[in-house]
Image (cartoon, rainbow, N blue to C red; front, side, top):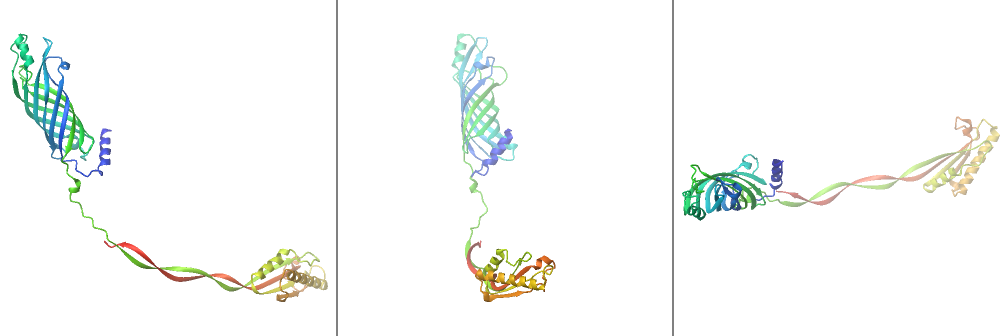
Length: 371
């Protein structure tokens, strides 16, 4: 889960940076506690410790720093249940190994685990407490040094560094220091060990700007405006004369001559209103299955007359009507009863819409890239 969080954080920030994460320099302030191990209860020997550091990274994995820390430490005698204080300061040159970057494909992480190893010098002074115990006779002959002591220091430790921003970080550091056997004023034929733990605030600087890297040149875009001729189809419609015809049938019951329904008459009248030069042919018939030729001729004549009268009454000019009566001499339909009929044929000059397509053009301005 920690690794996933590191990767996601790095991915989200990689495009936002305008600088390289490494190399860079740093300055840090540290504060915490320390303990120098001896034959006394450890919890009674913890004292404050403060430090300052200045260093830098050669690359994303290896770096170095100068680290100075110290203040006060304690020793003690279990047999007397007494402790004594003295001052010290330690300066070291540390090598830094960034374990997170060593095992990662990227070098920008929210958290980094660092391994330290270094050597330096330790200076101790103000050993008056132990001198007083010696003078009292309680621990005569124990004191290994009096006014001051200069000794070696070798150490190893680890640090967890959290990135707060481009320039600031917060870290937790634990170090184990190996010092001269005389450091705690007791001779034991082995080096004395000191453990320190501290929190630190670090300021990072001297990054290299990504913008300083050679980047591929981007050619300036050049645009021009041109005028293009665009051809298109212009579609219109015109009225074209056309000869049209309306045919209708009016059927009758036996011995009937009245034209029904009226809708047939209305249809003819409407056609004439919408056409010019109309001609109407009205022809009536009678069926052979009933009556005789004389009677049937009479019926057909009445039927023709009634249709003509109805048309004239509806406003049709009688001069455009041609009337005929066939009696039963002609049977237009094979079915007997359908021959009791008046057939009307109306012709006239009308118009229809005809599509006209013509080629036209317009001038359009267009911008295009030339470079």
